[in-house]
Length: 106
Image (cartoon, rainbow, N blue to C red; front, side):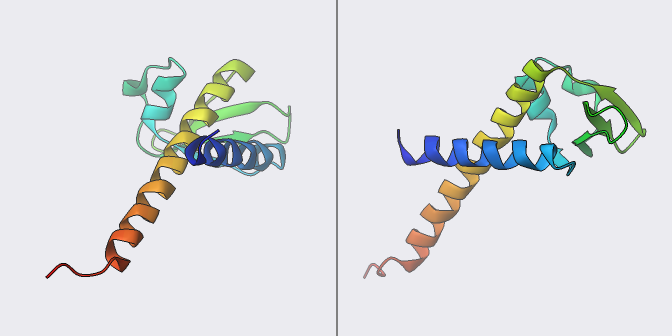
């Protein structure tokens, strides 16, 4: 398993634990597309949360203040998309830092 896969798995578990603890998780429309949702009907201000009332996970769109319950399968796909994006961002940031810390070319 390479570093990105390990990081993706780590981020996935962190996100899953956040929702299990009733925290919210910010997502993007691209994350929804990965779970075969129609991203065009959502704003850019969306997140997942776990309801304290019925314990299910919901997508909440802050722009129009609507929420919709999602299935476990959709949740897995969305969280995997978020985790992969975060792992890729972490990898790119490390590469950028290595570039900035590299010796100057004459």
